Length: 279
Image 1 (tube, rainbow, N blue to C red):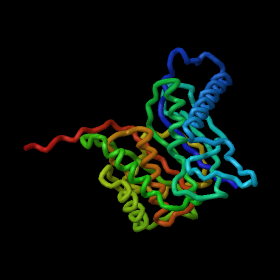
Image 2 (cartoon, rainbow, N blue to C red):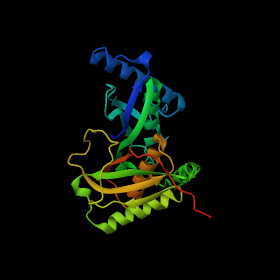
Image 3 (spheres, rainbow, N blue to C red):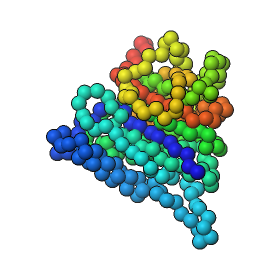
């Protein structure tokens, strides 16, 4: 048995002129996109991020005990150009769960693989990251890894504040209507952010999705928004989006939510400079 997860990178792509083939038929453009994504996966294999089959001992026991190993099983994206934000690249991976369970899902290596492919063919304006997280296959303690991520992103200049919308969606059976439950998740998120970022709860009345997210294929039938937050971060990159997604997923898991969730981090805002206090 395998549990699948999906990540999608949203934004705009201005392809290098020597790689632009807008005059070609759609089938040729699709073939070009698939070739580049395949090349990116080869690079991920070289990094040790990707193992297509795993290994077996001479006795036949399967060895697949590295938490960031994953099996690519589908991928795609919209490189058609033109105006508007698109889901530029997405990938679905199977994560073996029969041998061991880990606290972290491979959000970072999957996202980095897609971003590497996109930036190789053009200039990317990144606006959102979408992730389908099968939290039911996770277990253990991710605090050390999240502490390291927090310290890394705390090195950015504190003079910049960027608002990032993070939404959490799930199937109706695992929805919650209690503001107290949302507050529990909020506290768990802020604990994991430390002083590197802040997070606020958005009520239904206050929530207005930023235009950074393109239309995404529904991966949870009947999914509805369970909670919405606004994060204030010091920088906006795909790696920051991964951090916020992982923090949110771990906070959900820590507060007892073990169902699949869709988490989206999106921004279309311009960085705001804080004014230094007058002396």
